Length: 328
Ligand code: ATP
Image (cartoon, rainbow, N blue to C red):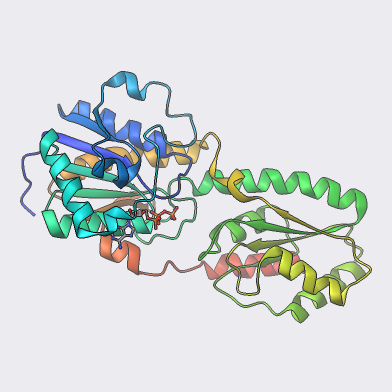
């Protein structure tokens, strides 16, 4: 597309927060200043766009935020933005500030909203993949995924200590309603006995057999990782079922929950967020609209948002194979 003249960019974070969102906002704003643009912070995602919760940013807003978890712009889910009336209000507010381009940092829902908004109003926009779930195509990894996996592994290591001391079987539930990326990564990284993910069905009988085999091999602790959206049920449901087969096992369940969303981003997430933040502003200035900036094989790639949100991100079969070999 022929680049439009862009003078004022608005940036927002939307949907579930993820570590590295602050680093991404900082990079977007710094890159904007570098190219002589005015930068605006839109608070509480699309909700703030509708309620005109919009502030012109200067460098004070982004000092010392790179290392902080969460998002200083705050995030929200907005039911009103799903309506044409809500989006019209949002558009009018952008117009009143003279904002002529947008950077939307969020997950697939937030990018879907950005795409619709672009189709309706033609405001140049670029999405950045900000979600711990890693469930967006068009990027090898999403901003926040690496930190979430590190947080999960750190917690599971601690659970391992108590599991070993008491010869216990732990079921640890990690985030991932529709995608097993965190479960697989944290499962391999914490030597899990089994990993249950939404994309695959694991039979309870097969799981029980595996646990029995490991017991014969005198494994002193067993940790089973369950993604929250697992096809076989929640960690608690699976633990209850397994207990009926293995009544003598000392079984415990831990749900890591929102712990995985918080915390200071890892160096990987800081780097990814920083590169993608700059890529978002440069992409807009080059006329790349309605796309998501991502990183594939360490190169910046702009993927049409419709493709990034629709394509189911494939699990890495090699990861599954390795997990299987290492847990037998
Ligand atoms: P996460 O991956 O953490 O859940 P997300 O960005 O997918 O993040 P959602 O709650 O799905 O989170 O979406 C965030 C917001 O994006 C919604 O509250 C809504 O305002 C907007 N949005 C999502 N889907 C649409 C849609 N189809 N039309 C318009 N806006 C949408």
